[in-house]
Length: 351
Image 1 (cartoon, helix red, strand yellow):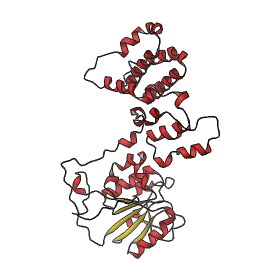
Image 2 (image 1 turned 180 degrees about the horizontal axis):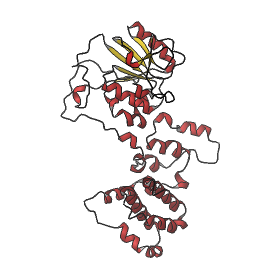
Image 3 (image 1 turned 45 degrees about the vertical axis):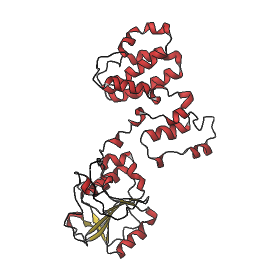
């Protein structure tokens, strides 16, 4: 496993830390398995092993420490005074989840289903609330954790596991950046993410205010029936690039999902997003028709028009996802051309 996925060793070293803390009599055995990784070439593995060895060595009594004199010399190194190794190791040793997390004291339903899930980037709606845990727990295992230090402790270890949440850089305005004010009140409702002025970022692809788009030309992308956050993230990025007026999703909180952000590349900061639940989708589309929009479904049917042959009306609402109930309702149905009929196209690729 180490040869194929060296990064996974950090997780196994963390497991050895938990074992040594829960079963003190096995500390020597765990330390013996950790020492060999203290000189690993992989930087995260080496730092994790050194931090684990330092903590285990500190938990041993004076007599047993004599056996590990060589390990003491290794973990108390000062070879990189200007590098990141010492800082990373010190942070690990001070991290509650790495240095103090205890199987017997802290492993309960709240820890596993709520706290750790929340710290690893899982969105709030996908975690199990404490109230539900208390109502449904009839086992002998503890439902909740009463350790205040544990509940309030931040963690660099577990927050770093959510890599997707930070892979998309956000472009925030500095204090000196001047953003023009429109003088109009900003819509701060829960179901709308207002688009940020394009003048505040050099990364803006299409400046809607300055582009020569006719007043009667508008495009709304309705993706309420797309349920995968990564697909929605790709659709959001594509919508922002091509200047879509509004992206409609089922739940506005999907923009906080780490998988969404992995493909959106911070485009949700600039793209206006609204929420329309699937149950309210048909009335929403009917209302768009009254406003002059043409509803176009993205679906493969026998009488659909090929995407490259279709001419868009000036006002249109594109709908992505599988919609067997509403397929016959739109005036037009677009068919993405596929070279392999056995492989359905992804919604964000079609967009």
